[in-house]
Image 1 (spheres, rainbow, N blue to C red):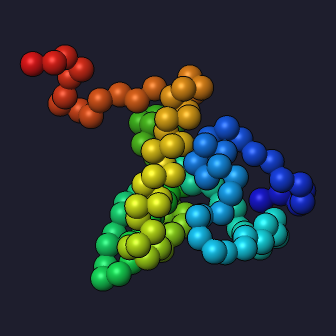
Image 2 (tube, rainbow, N blue to C red):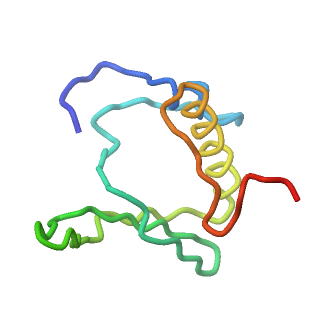
Length: 118
């Protein structure tokens, strides 16, 4: 989190939300001190229960120099209503596309699959 009150925008962030609030009748207040910004090294898991889903993130807190084995700690858990899932998916797809187009990310096919057509 920074103490700087100025607004900064990056390409992926702009692609994800267009810099605008969702297309609803809402007014978005941008207060840099209201939102907590946290760092995580990765996504640990997704849990779904009733009408909410939880994204659990981890941080690497140590690494064995001999074996390379990492020690992870749960960093944060984001809990959202199920109705936010399509919005989150759409935003993440736009971020992925922007990162790929900018040459900052190369997506590899899932393990056990090939790029070749049958």
